[in-house]
Amino acid sequence: MLFGMIAATKKGLYYLLDKNSCKQTGNFVVVVLGGASEALDSRPGTYLALQTGSYLVPCISFGEQSLYHQVPNEKGSWIRWLQDKFTSISTIALPIFYARGPFPYRKPVYTVVGAPIQCEKINEPTDEQVAHIKQIYIEKLQTLFEDYKVIYDPEANDIEFV
Image (cartoon, rainbow, N blue to C red; front, side, top):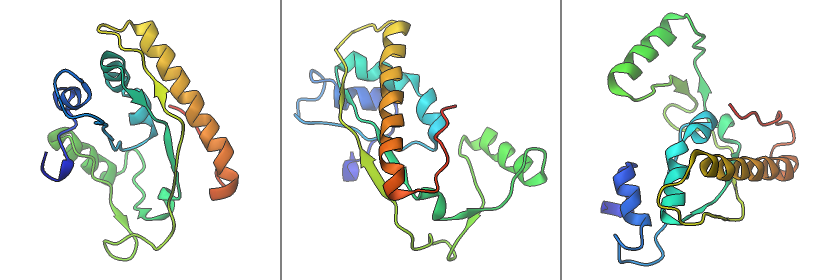
């Protein structure tokens, strides 16, 4: 846990969130995901929150898309083929981006944090229980987006959950 960071593995996250495993109090974890589709397909995170009785906290950021430009990589292009090959070998996505050299453009990013969603501790949550919490989480994200897009990104399109 050098610098307070751990691998985002189920074992590592469970250790920190389970009150019986880790005797320190007040632990929480933040998992930074690569995109909205990853966030919503992350069923194990919801499952783990239910197993440990943790809170899920909806967060959304405005302005991230303005920090860099990405080189066009349409499906079927050689760049996309190369990126897909690299990802299949290394499991790391490699977008080709630019801004001010390797540094982002100097534009603000606003992160809005919603109210925590309490997850009742359930040792073996069912698919229905996981789906229920996931639906609540999606609704809270949608509300955050609608409430704050007018303030932080008035030109934003509607949010789309994949």
